[in-house]
Image (cartoon, rainbow, N blue to C red; front, side, top):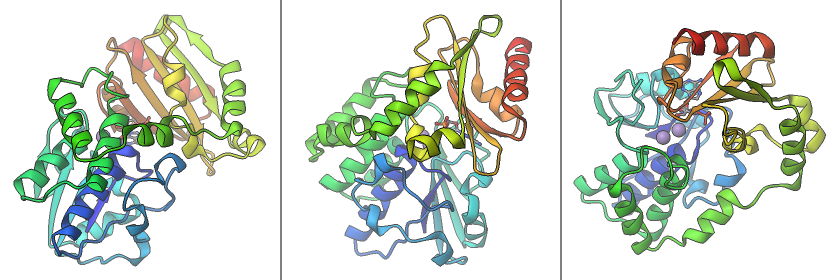
Length: 303
Ligand code: AMP
Ligand code: MN
Ligand code: MN
């Protein structure tokens, strides 16, 4: 049984699908799944092996082995928490500093720029060879979690791994096109609305905006398509921290936080029940937009 965190991103899906295919190529019978809501964001539907995903309500609650990628704590497995707890043995493969080491075996390296780096090392040690599909899954994980090789976590070895993956057959422009250059026009129109109401709070070096369910309905898009919105918001040159609040169907807000180095948003998010990395983190808020922002501002000013 192979899985990853709820609302999987490129690193979570790419790592899980890579191990799944490598084991299947080796004659094993792995199962790969992730939590409800069982929908893959559009930009990741091209990933090799995506059709191998099994719905979470159909997977064993008594697996021999459960391997999970890119999840910093057990609750991040969502509706698969019971499947993890029911497995005979568990392995956690992750790179969050906040990782709670909830597996029997924990392959956790907070200095790794993506879980895919650890996945690639796992394949090497298991003598499971790359093929172009596995390489594409791992490359997508790497290029997304490093912000296209630009974030602070990128080191020389990151580029060496990218080179190895390209040599194994990745068509990198196909990945770039699918992940970064295939927006719905509705998303671009939504951006116009959401960026028009962007706010700065200089006293906290914060820039922020929000997306509502009404915005999504007006432009006919899914919240998963707004993953890269924060990458635009964070480009405000006068702010260290960026926040995007995303209204969920139940009225709570999923909060995305990014820092350019001045603030540790991972600590901030962990303190309010979320998690993440020092420079990229998130949490869920039951408060309204104003109260959520006040909470973030207070935490930033207290730090
Ligand atoms: P996002 O802003 O959703 O792209 O998430 C940024 C980082 O924060 C990722 O490493 C996530 O794994 C982590 N993260 C986001 N939301 C949560 C949450 N509710 N609980 C724990 N970690 C989170
Ligand atoms: Mn992730
Ligand atoms: Mn990751």
